[in-house]
Length: 321
Image (cartoon, rainbow, N blue to C red; front, side, top):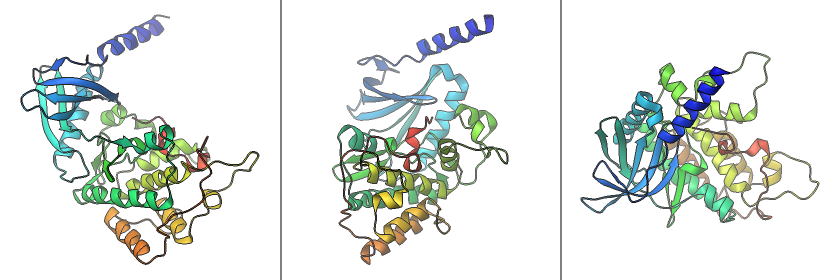
């Protein structure tokens, strides 16, 4: 009983420690908090105004309850972002400290993420739109890979659309290509149980396998995530008829043959995947320019999807850090 009460007490204390900063308050005498954007496994994100310049910025603060581990993870994210320079990736501005408080300051990119556009706004993506977003995303991903890193979190909340352009955000899970993270960081990122596949003969649910596959420190994991993101967009306007038996995504979406083959390669279901985002982009350009994938993308849309089948679920259906 005592251990249970102690655990509940610690949980309540951590919730109090991590309560979001008040809107209108000033952080480190330099940044005015405009609004709270969200919370991850070790950080809190805020839209802020820099008092000296009046510039709008995004401030990611290490969560107090995570203590030194949270600060290590945030500094790690800052170091990676500082080494990237691409118009579709938030620009690194500063890493600031004051006592035990630490924060990463970066460019604030406005826009609606793909998840909000599809689920809240009811937007049904055509094949042309979805492939256009994929092609745009391959540009920052190629830059990330060429810099020696893997994003490892290519999901619908991390893709922003604004005035026809697409940005890739949130590098909290990024790592070096082939890098093996220390055990304490894996635990901090809630990845320790996913370090290996289950023992032989033990079934693994699709969500766990999806998450494990996206977390591999190799470029193909970003392309794998991109494949699921593409399927999510294509399913956003699809609704099965009442009583219809569940079928494969190839049967339900009825895509052009080369488009389906392209998705299978992203998911590594047919032939080995591409070794880099740049090579994947070259292949997509070849297919589009050669007319092998219809640019109109007019697969029939039947309204909003009520529940995507498990075989097509985006990793956002799984709780991720």
